[in-house]
Image (cartoon, rainbow, N blue to C red; front, top):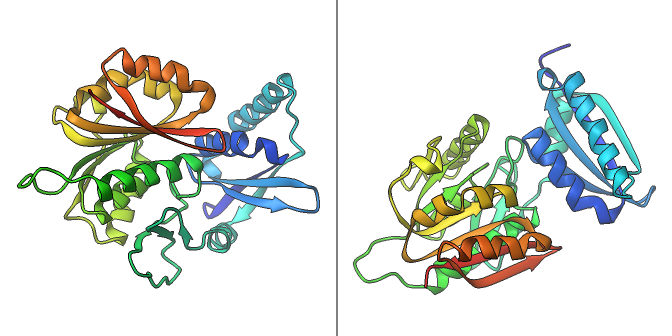
Length: 297
């Protein structure tokens, strides 16, 4: 098989399953996914791409196991198709799907192949969407961006303290770090996934923000610096696991923005963070996804 051939997984699901299936395929592929309405079959088509060397019998088995798990919960996809896609087909799919998108009152996310003229007060972030999680379209990313905008545009740091110092944990494509930098912060973005680090570095260069964003593969538990603002768009299990490490890196009076979980996970997460001294200051909800702004009293 040519090294320029990709494997495309097409997953047709009822609209109610869209978020569940999109999140699974995003985590499974390690990249963003394409979500399209399929009016002919009254469902949602989710497309994920794998390099040819990344997809084999194990991946096929995992997909089949996932379908069985869904069936055990009474959830039934409308169809699954696995096929080869040429490099140019993969690239064109991304270009057709990803257009400039205004995700908050000020922030606009655009791919590098689109020309976008910013309006008054708009802040533009350029993201190459094909490499890692974080294209600005998933509810958890949007919620984090809204919470970030709220803090960085409404709160004022003490005089003489300089720009906001922000930590972005599990940066993915670097979208939250880029937004924070565009809103005036200096950012340390970390991720243990080498592909995510490479993606974030490329996006930092695309936005010419090398002087204010540092991207590292340093694990959270190895950091010693404290930050007045921390961003962590992770999964519920990861947030429970790293709760103490996140709290330990949060400066007194600072804010921790967490997302990546559903409303059903909220009580357990609030209890976990409360047990280490962090209290809910605000919450944002979209399509059963939640973002919390936590503070140390």
